[in-house]
Every structure is written in C-alpha cells, then in structure tokens.
Image (tube, rainbow, N blue to C red; front, side, top):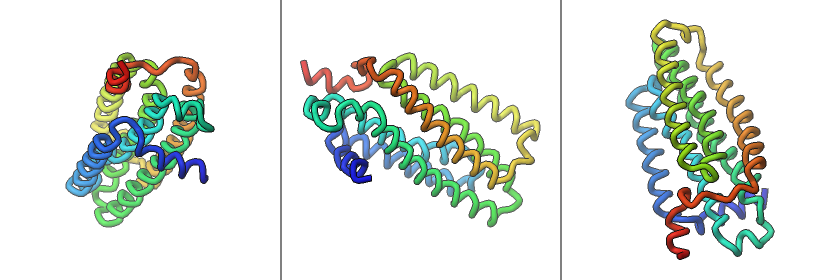
Length: 216
C-alpha cells in the first residue's frame, strides 16, 4: 500500500499533469451535472464519471518517459502492475460513488427504476471497454482509438435497440450495480494480462507526442 501511495504522489511529475487534471475535473463535473439533471436515466453522465480513471493510468504510463524512473525501483512496473492497481482503486471509488447515487435515485424515483438500472448497465458495458482500451492505446495508439470509437458506438446502438424492445426491463438497480463490480474485477485482470503481453512493445510516440518533441 505504501508503494501505491508513493506512486500516487509521483503522478504530479507526469506529462502535462496540470492540464490533464483540469480535463479530468471537467469530465467529472460534466458527469455529475448530467447525473443530477437526468436523475440517473442517462448513461452519459455516469460514463464521464467512471472514465476519469483513464487519467490515472495515463499519469503513470507517462512516467515511463523518465530515465530516472525507469532505472529506479519502479522500473518496468510503471508499465505493468502499478498503473493497473491505481486504475482499479480509482475505478472502484468512482463506481461506488456512482452506484450509491443510483441506488438513492431508485429509492427516490421508483417509477424510473428500470431506466436507472438500464442506463447503469450500459455504463458498465462501456466501462469494460475502457479497461481494454487503456491497456493497448499506449502501444498501438491509432488502431486503439479507431477500435474504441467503433466498439463504443456499437455498444450504444445495441443497447438502444434492446432498450426500445423492453429487453432490459427486468434488471434491477442492485443487479446492475453488482454487474459493474464484476466488470471492474474482470477488466482489471484482462488489463494486467494485456499489459504483461505488450510489456516489451515500446510506447508509441503518438501517445505522448509532446515528450518526444521536446526530447529532440
């Protein structure tokens, strides 16, 4: 646990830390406002909230550009278990807050329970793809972006079709919440395995173009 705390502190030395913090807080604010405005019936707000975990993964991965970091006790772990563990912790925290809010809304607006549960399930499905995306994007940047956009679009379209034919009406908010925790566990394991598989693959210059540009 002490190691993870040290790594959290090291994140402030990551590439464009202040800029990315601003964007992360912006996404988080938009997500919260959307959640409140839609009363939990929209997947967009919740998706923005849980997506903030991407930034933690990025903070750690950008530390790979530092020779001092790579030659220290962190070594190759900044490309392997450390970003995965920190991402899992942040994802669990954000998702728990989102889930508690959704459960509260379900109790407050029981007539919207089906919509709240269905939109949370959609968030969880997209959440799963985020874990895979973050594990690959720093090694295969353009391909990852294209596949991620296509996959998310396909997931949203598929969900809307199912939702329109009332295929998801039997799902409760509690079941949707539980599915999210399962997805976090499975996504974390797959994320680690993919990072381990690609550990020898160099980080693409497109992922942190500013660092490579400044190094020339």
